[in-house]
Length: 125
Image (cartoon, rainbow, N blue to C red):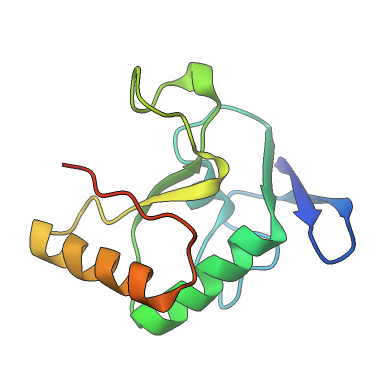
């Protein structure tokens, strides 16, 4: 069971949820992102995100129109990740598309940029 803190940007308050690994993340539509997917390989019993990130995920998943593999969206800096590069997975970024071809990832990236849903989309070379 994970304790999940969600900053609700509409109310300026933190909300607390308790969810099992197979349950959907708070504010997630149609169970397109489970706690297990969000957590990835993190061992933390406490996860956090904000409502905007979950709503952006919902919108992007809807326009993408098919399942999206999520490697993880939450990792504490000391749990690894991109080594000496940025550690931005603290509940506000999604590592997606690792199971896609380079062409499919570019298609997803271009859709993410053109949609205007995300503030920043990084191309990993």
